[in-house]
Length: 507
Image (cartoon, rainbow, N blue to C red; front, side, top):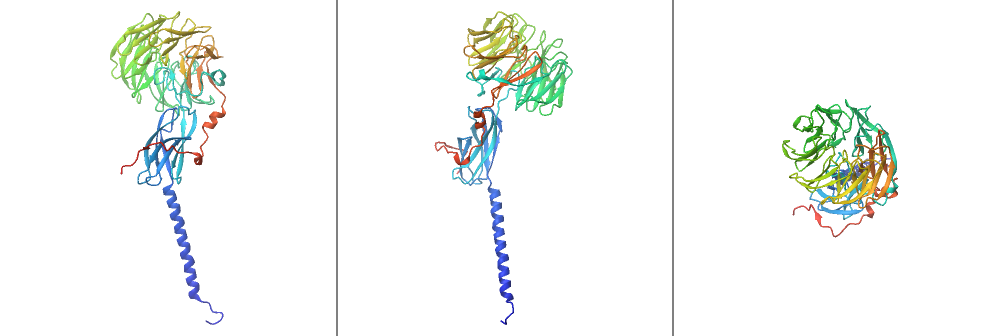
């Protein structure tokens, strides 16, 4: 080759080699990235929130085929899944621990090989969705923040002016629903943490009824004679149904139907389609029904001003039985272990066989039992009386276990949670009592508490007073609650080698 000439063959070969190498590396990079994305593990939870001890189902994908995968709730290994040939697993059941405090927690799915892991949030939260709660006992068995030892340290968190003195709050997924006062005629939705008003819906009358919340809908009665269904997120009206009488009764939603009482002249019980508001059936009593129904195992139980307690077929409204007391019945029934407990204006608490209506026992207090409705917990019935006392009675025998004297009569319905009874008095105090002994653990002056009854959820107590103010009480935010919601370090999780595999694929 002559000096100064360029070897084009060599240059061409080198250029082709460089271009080929770049293409190869680009191909490898694209393949690697695509493989990483396709193999990225994912996990889903159903449901995404629930109370302590509540079950959730975990499904995952993007793991190695036949991989052994530990599923943790926070730092506790709750289940062992085995992926199928596609690297997926489905519907593995774990439970939120009883000690899981309200707030955000983490579910982690970790391959035992250590090659893949993923986390998802789970919200521990308890609801009080209607006057009775779904167990019809005014009992919150999930409460794990407030207890006998610390409830004395409760303080005021916030107040909201404009609540109705007779409406009891419902609490669902961080929102409080409560009736408005005599001048506002509103159904109100409030932020449970701050008390900020989220929305309000104005009816044609005072909202004495306590709301019921189910499947994203709020159901409530009004003194304008109507039952309303309102979107729980927006406050937009979905439907209304006119009964022709005041609706002071609090609705219960069960099996796609809304059950509620109505006052004179259309006194009775109504069953409405929960989706449309269409009348399913009605049962006429001889007087007003301001008692809130309890619905258990296909039977609707309710009291009436005609002095009777009724049991009706939930599907048809047919009368199953009735029991006559010696006075009008405004109190709402609690039903537990096949027994119905209810108070009467004749000064007595009654225990009736829920199937037959037969009297099991009665206990005479020194005053009327009007709006106070029994709560039942661990074999004890708690109820207030116009003789200024809160009573604890043996649920099987009616024997007095203890009584607590309040300065004025007790028209509020007790709520029980984690060994504590919460109840208000006309003297203006909200009380927390030891459920076993009746000893006073805490009290706070809020002004007279009439028909409104407390709701106890997620470490907070909510109640309305006759000042037209809704009060929220709770403990100060503790370091323990903050620690409980901290995202666990995947490297620190330790598998439980005693777990047996769940959902293992077929060979």
